[in-house]
Image (cartoon, rainbow, N blue to C red; front, side, top):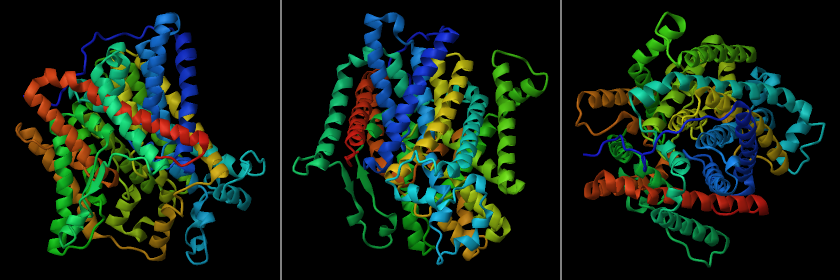
Length: 638
């Protein structure tokens, strides 16, 4: 009977990292730094009006990063044959990949791209009609925002020279402050991952499906790239993406129709409350779904249909219309999932605390645990001081960043256990949960304003760094990378990602002007302050309900082995981006289930190269189209 502990394509001996310190610093950190710069520039250019992407960084694996890894791996094959002393070891290649992935996540659509406009939106979009000047501008600290009219005009209208010395004094203090906070945030996530990794990797033995893709590319050597099945899958996905791109540029060229929506079939009440039923085929999502544990991928698509059914039932009962994506219920599920993860690891965390602060037994991880524990405390203290200096009250800061870290842990758990192609939680930031339960007056105008200024941290959670860090530990474990070096590389990459990401987004604004700003979170803030809201018992009840269902699913799964549905599937299985992916995940699940039924685990393993090829083919072709668009400065298909 298939289990959710599927093994890798090929069983191999675990290599060790014997790289010298000087070689590591020059080759790994040096090469990683160059590729971080290239990937950040590529990604930021592609997501800011250069190509019509909809976000290259909203997937669990970034296409540009996978493209870079494949190119680097193929180049490494050549070096092994002709200059073996120059070739990278698997541990070095893995470290470079993790560095690029972590840094690119920070520069992506849901984090720094949301941060930079927040520095000026409150002033650029202020009008007499919205009265932002009177409502909340006074609560915004000068050292975190940009107010100079000349600097803002160049940024929001574009076509300016970003090297003009007149504009940079206005950006210097915000750039330095936010870079420091972003770097410390990533540092705290690395430390949190260190504290949780043994529990998840060694004790619970979670699958880390997303990590299997780079592990196979790096660890299989030339064997994987000689597989005919790999190239069949690659050709299928590459051809579909190539034809779609050509059709976008030249409509006379035909393309494969891969997107359907069943909405026209559901036009009467209460069925029209489902907001459509998309059936989209994404080759990469089918490939990644094949790597997901079969019972977890079942939970994913079943619960997606369950969320849709909730809309129909609510409409039939005449309940008030809710967010189309059930944001409140999913927020409760995420918070519950974080608590479940911490509760499941309570004994491990207790031993860690005893080792660090008491007289517990020492082992090889003691030094790293001590570093991580004090790192969490130190970064938390820095964040609290930063928030207090900005004007946020201590209780509000503790609640905001406490919930934020709970969301981070929940999302990282989803990736480690389930490995979906994407994940998101829009429209329910920690401050909104506080408003739902307490109302705007209880939270206070200053606190609400400053929490909106911090909202870039919690925009959508799709390209979040912490899952990439945790997956980095899994990849590092597979290739015997030294923990200290991997941790140092991730911290270094996080700092570079903050500098490059924030700096490049500012530059892009002056060159091409930013997109998707329009006031951003300040519009919600303005409505809160202009028309104060009381606690919303109905919507806050949705938060509680989502959490209760998640806890109930966890209890059922723990007590009854036969229970097929996982709480993580419930928490992650709905949302705007998820609605595009669910059918592809269903197809991946069906293919895996069929292969396991007919050919067993051996057949499953033999088929892995084909599904890896689907991921590689679509991402290589899509990255190629984006690169073409960046070079020729023209909107292309992606």
